[in-house]
Length: 146
Image (cartoon, rainbow, N blue to C red; front, side, top):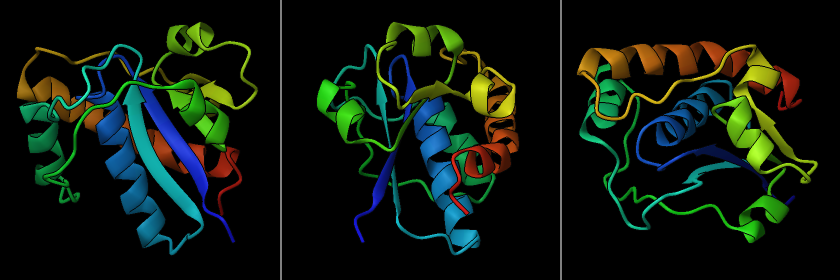
């Protein structure tokens, strides 16, 4: 069976979407849910940029695996067309990708937008990670991943 692809999207692919990617991978592993591959991308990402230090810190503190090799990448039409679901951090980002039937947002799936923590304190990143983590059970349920 071919893996269904889930792509999380934010602006720069260095903060929110890589955290969402890591959280969903961890949650799928815990639940022993297979047949999904999870990645992330950014609407205005600088290809090759590293994950933000505070994103990495928040994930590590939460005991979530952080791949050292992570590098930001810009969302492409091919990524969208190959994905089972493209999940944006905000409704505004999802609107920018309107027209693709597989594009949605965390708000549509879990009733919550995830504001950009870029450049803020480690505590803001921790709060962002908590918000993303709280959304994942709804994401899994609403995308019929179980």
